[in-house]
Image (cartoon, rainbow, N blue to C red; front, side, top):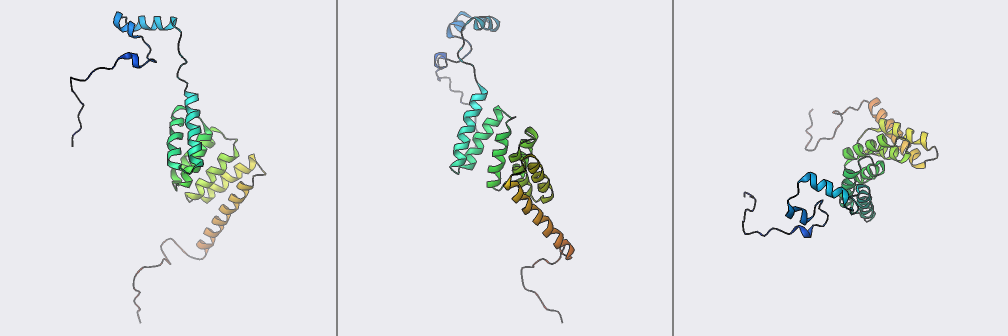
Length: 199
């Protein structure tokens, strides 16, 4: 199936009156003023309130927060992505995005979002905790321990960071025990199927 542009010449053009926020008036078009003349006239005229990216980003963030609280994680991500497009330096949004991605099982993107949050706000313990959790889910318990220790250095009374650090330490200890016992990635794996005995 081929999609083409509708070239129907019978289409009626919409009036510019329907779009009040355009930077020129219908009268200016009728009088044939050039772009520079329009800009001069525009400077003299009283403007409506200009596009406010911060307010729009805050609106998207609030909508995303409500969706996340309702368990609609994918929709929340969409709203937060829109807010991040307007305000990419918002560490809170990156951290929230990482938490939701962890809920959805997307450890790699959660790791990227949490890393960005810690780059933007290096003294925010919760961002380091979320990064540590993303690292754990991505299979990097050694890195996770470092992140939890950074969080504890910032906020020593954080029970979450302490508990998660213990979990990561346990995983590292368990991994060392497996290596010391002689298990490798290839040996001692279960094989599905019939086992034939050789005598």
